[in-house]
Amino acid sequence: MYGSSLKKLFVGATYLQHAVEKLRALFEGASKVEFVVGSADRIPYPDDEFEVVVINSVLLALPSRRDIESSLAELVRVCRPGGTVFVGELPFRSELGRGIWVHQARKLWEFGVGTWLRNAYHLYLRPALRREPLLLYPARNLHVPEEEFEVMCRRLGVGVECRRHQELRRASTTRNDYVLKLKGKRGAVSSSQ
Ligand SMILES: C[S@@+](CC[C@H](N)C(=O)[O-])C[C@H]1O[C@@H](n2cnc3c(N)ncnc32)[C@H](O)[C@@H]1O
Image 1 (spheres, rainbow, N blue to C red):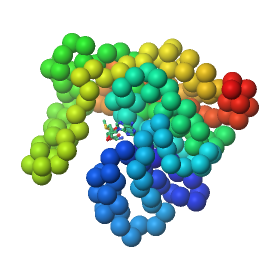
Image 2 (image 1 turned 90 degrees about the vertical axis):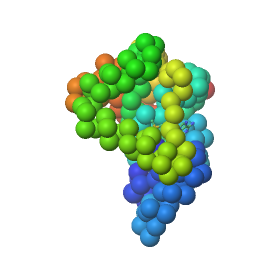
Image 3 (image 1 turned 135 degrees about the vertical axis):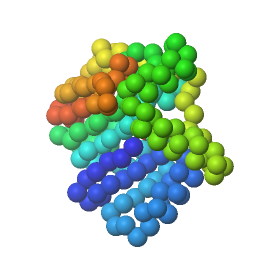
């Protein structure tokens, strides 16, 4: 997850302390870069802090729709009126319903062999060799149909300006990316409270 503003060029936040420490070491000495421990529904920055807020491939890993909606509210909270929230990779259909092998076959088809192998190496093989924690998907990742996502946004007083399927090697048959422009954030959010 990251946000950008004029003051801070780039801010990363993840809820895992070890990941944050690793990122801080990697970017040691870089100015305007900050990594903090937080979570999608608890971002340790004040309201309207960022011009652009990006969250990619995270909402699908949350335990419930309620968590997705509270995280979305938090992303909107830290983004200033007129800013942009990008929500990447939210499944609109079940990905794992037909089992892990069907899921992997589809990924292979979407990414192509090279990217699929690189992902497998970086996500599983290398961490396993280094005895680092593995990134494991929940048994069933949450999917939110487009209409439902739009209803969530409307409840927050935010419209979905652009919705697109991922531009992978082939368009994803399960996941969308969404761009939210926070035009009327202030009035809309306060009028729904
Ligand atoms: C599929 S990875 C995506 C990683 C990265 N955002 C990317 O685009 O490559 C899912 C990430 O979500 C993070 N995550 C899971 N639950 C989270 C939460 N409640 N708040 C913030 N991050 C969370 C995990 O630590 C993991 O790094």
